[in-house]
Amino acid sequence: MAKKKSSKSKSRGTKKPSSSQGIAAVTAYVADQPPATAPPKIRQCGAMAAHFRLLEADPGFRSRQLNLENAVARRMLTGMVALKGGPTTIPVVVHVVFRTAAENISDAQIKSQIAALNKDYRATNPDKSKVPAVWKGLVTDVNVQFALATKDPKGKATSGITRTLTTRTSFGSNDSVKSAATGGVNAWPTNKYLNIWVCTLGGGLLGYAQFPGGPAATDGVVILNTAFGTTGTATVPFNLGRSATHEIGHWLNLRHIWGDTEHCEGTDFVADTPNAQQPNFGKPTFPHVTCKNGPNGDMFVNYMDYVDDAAMVMFTAGQVARMSATLAGPRSTIGN
Ligand SMILES: [Zn+2]
Image (cartoon, rainbow, N blue to C red):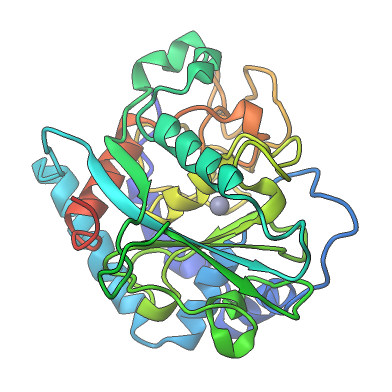
């Protein structure tokens, strides 16, 4: 079985880059970058870069994260995870920020993304048949569904979609898309809505998310417009809506499955995902053994790896427990 990794979390703090190294390490991601000349070929997510930037910028964030982490761990130990009968429905607002007509994606493309999320987060995605037999028993329904908001913050009827014309050719993972003052659009109240900004991102990023416990004004996820939904401008190999599935996983406090280090010491704080050395890309072949995790190897079919959309098809029971604890705790004001 998977090696329990929680004991290793203690070493994380000491191995984290010092403040100055941390800043240097993420500077490349922080600046707004020119749009790519071609759609990304491999997955790259800016969630950890944004996370380290916030840890540097917001003195209270680190302690809030630690408190949340302890609360989530307690809930998981005592079984106090959300055990509602029906699924939790999360109201979503999609903010389309565009300069060109192509960037102003259609309602149909947006709705195709919501439909994809509702398959992935209920484990009704037909391609879960790709999960190797050894992990089939771990495929788990998150019991969460998503719906475009029908009421805006003032209680008026809405499509759950906003459209904002910008002069910006692209955005980075520095949250500029989340503010009207920097060419984007402000969030709807983040304690009531999941805000998803859809725009052109530079630096080869497919998206990024803010973990629970961060600043309210920037809470939510950002997705590259050509990696959003399953129709319209959605482009192979990121045209199955899995960039949003992955980023919303971060928003619900999931970490990357390899633990965001490259020396087998990192952890994703989940016990039933195998320890893995690095992200997997493309469409790997089973098994891919690293970190002495044979014979089954890395769980590259997991939504929190870096593989192509067509290769990521599952969350585990441990990940779902962590997301449920997050919904019952730090994100309890969202959904019903
Ligand atoms: Zn990620």
